[in-house]
Length: 136
Length: 322
Image (cartoon, rainbow over all chains, first blue to last red; front, top):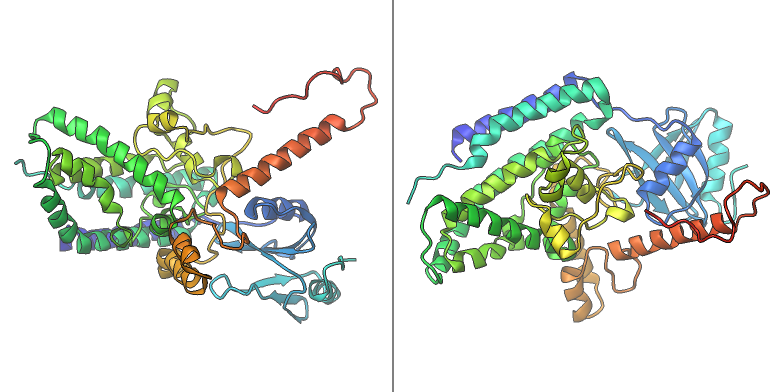
């Protein structure tokens, strides 16, 4: 390994990453509640999904588990990531938007945008409520 | 002693061209096979890995040469010794790789390669920065003690690494049967990168899949259980430093908080996912839970009342899983 190889490698890294961007690669969206449930079960071993709420852009979802917990799912590049969180959850609501804290600095919060402020308020209420509450 | 080139350096242009070609295929078939941020993270980790390799290379070679002086045999530079070194080095890779998934200390270094949720040629370049720190080079010592020159071992290891590049793709479905039987292939290695419970901790081979078949760690890819890639607890971050160090930080935190010396040691050497209070899942636990659920589903389907007289014989044994 010499400086020329090192500089060439760095240039190649930038060319390849730039090509991925120029070709418009990536993109991911949750199609519906079934898709959100399936995604949560695939990402979280042992998680049994129940009802799900998908945000209006398809970029995030809250999936209620059979054990009373919630899987918060969010888009990560062209894939989805999830965290299984015990209720009650820490949720901030502002208009149609709600932000759920994951408790992990690197993972960050999960932001959802719902169809209406009422929907956002209702989901916030359920996520903040003890285990036996379900979305209406 | 011949003047051996670094085969990986020579292969870099081919790596770049093949990644670009695979991106074009992704553009035509499925854009989600690549994510620009994920690719940049993988390639950045690969670049960092070459720098880490250069920094540690001098010490590693000096140590290898020191060990080599205690060799059992004087092995020459004829071509057949290269062939034997290649095969034995691939066995060395299998052993190291298996332990890299079963011992958290080695996993902390190797996890970097698995931390992408994508499976494409850029994932092949997502390599560790902390290989030297994890002491993975110790696995090559038996080869030096047999008598293989460290530069010969470095050369065949480079060839091994180049071989493993092309198998990181979803573009190739299956190779011819005879090839799949002997060699590691995209299909076999997709299984290795998958987090599906069926596939966890399988197919450790580098070049020859026969090691997995011999030592009981082989699992074929199934079309009805498509691999999902990443790690059991995906990072959810494209931060390159976090990707390179997160498991080491996890070990440090666990060791700091562990109750007693035994737990401290086990947090370093037990399989990934082990915890002193059983609050986390190892791959065995995940697979056992999945198998129990599969069994439950089968029993449920078997017990489910059916009204049609044209249904299969109810007294017959339930169908076995393939």
